[in-house]
Length: 121
Figure 1 (cartoon, rainbow, N blue to C red):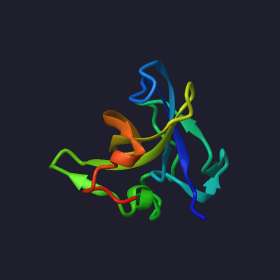
Figure 2: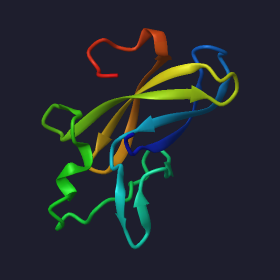
Figure 3: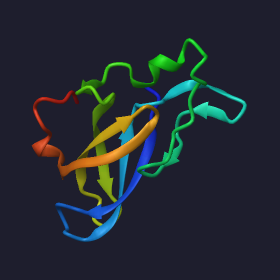
Figure 4: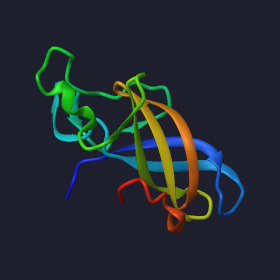
């Protein structure tokens, strides 16, 4: 059982074509440990909102993106996330870009059965 957080999006679902809430499960900045604000898991964030994590001076800070795919020299990381449409309950994936401890951009949304092969499940 792993720790995870949620990224809540307002996007068009590829299954029902409704603009609705989509909940994406991310392992970025996720840990059963935490700080005075609580555990670093089971929290909900929006794109552009910095996620709670260790301070940059803490040796654990660099673990915020353990096991993810780094891209380019701009220090962004990608994660393909299991996701669900709030309107039709379709099983989806959301490919998110993260910069430091912030989900910065939605790259792609699709049906779970079309999960991009280059990303771990």
